[in-house]
Length: 217
Image 1 (cartoon, rainbow, N blue to C red):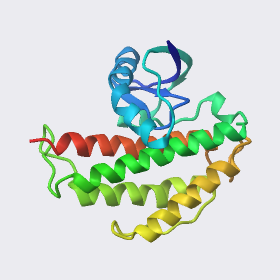
Image 2: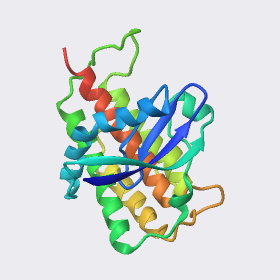
Image 3: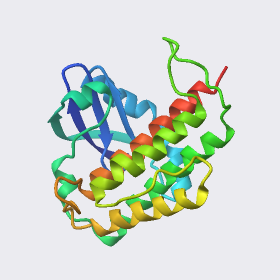
């Protein structure tokens, strides 16, 4: 049975459980216990991401909470918004490459889901939610305008069909993640590479799964 190292971010209204060795595999719920249950529930869906990345995903899992953080407004809003201590530790080359492969796997999953999703998605319980193209634009824009600057990058916000710029942006982000292997942020008030990978991968994958769920009748 493989141990999944988990960080818990606990807000006043919502908690997040993040699998620290599997960027993008983060789930939120009302309580810490429910967040871990949600993480386990989504294991089969994340296994598909690992397969795209060429990383073996364990069949039997146990969950070990390694760190608990007090959440803030971001947590309660629905975002895993804070790095944990281990994410400031240096990574070995093989660990960095595995991390980057998994981030790429999340992007590939997002692209594959978007390609087959209908333009108009089923609305949420309260009638809300972005349709496909707006959701894709939102993810691309967040990576260029919100996340990349935390890695010391200045990237353009690409059009959703501009595959050349999208690919270039992603290469730049992966390059920055590799450059941050020592665990130090690449700019003042920036993010450690390991947390940046977790946050970027989570955002893409969270919307991929939302798009997938809302594509169903």
